Image (tube, rainbow, N blue to C red; front, side, top):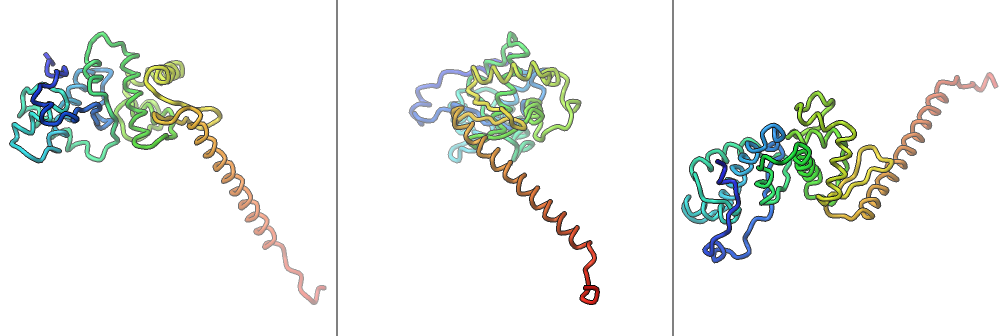
Amino acid sequence: MFNFLKASTPSSQAKKIDPTSKAEYINIPIQLLSGFLEDSRSSIRNIYYYSLYAAFIKIAIGSTKERYREACQWLNFQELDREENLQRGKILYDRFKQAPMTGIERNLYSEYNRPEKSDFEKACFLAYHAMKSIVGNKNFQKADNKLLWARMDGQVKTIRDITELSEPVRFFTQEYQTLKIKRELQENWGLVYYAQQTRGFYVSFRLDLKALIVEAMKRKRKSVEKQRLNKLRSLETEVSSELNKKPRVSKTEQ
């Protein structure tokens, strides 16, 4: 069961078609990770369907069979159940158009199809892809825990309260668990993280820590200056209003 989820070695024919074309990452909508902690195999199966169809429709030349074979070779998937896979993939592709995307390593998705993965390891998998979806194509991004938790739960928008999360994800909103996940992502998943005296945190997968701190501090200075100017304008408005309320002295009274 689920043998078709396992990556296979590309054939020599695939190399002749395009020796440079080999997917390293699979881009998927964050919603496909909904329910991952409860049923990771089902989520991964949907990742397979979606990514296969997304690759298939990008190939313009050839019959359905030829295009399907090329998509499988590019993704390093086995050629099985063409009609069913494309049909299921199309449903998911149409459902999640213009959604926040995250990039999953081509072989990582099948690694997390194994039952021996702990809930914490799965939570780190979710948090990594949640962070990837938050940063997107930018060098860095500012976020907060509520958005992180929401994306871990396969939700697009931030939450107002943890009661909006599924119960398995809600467990990892505990401060200790969230900090433990962030530490793991920094040590083993390539996350660069900064949260000193900031509301929320800054994250990046491209910048080093010093560069990220520079960006965070520049924005902090802008924020402080904006607050100073807003306070100044507010005081000016207040003084102006008080002056306008004072009765004017007529010339005869003088």
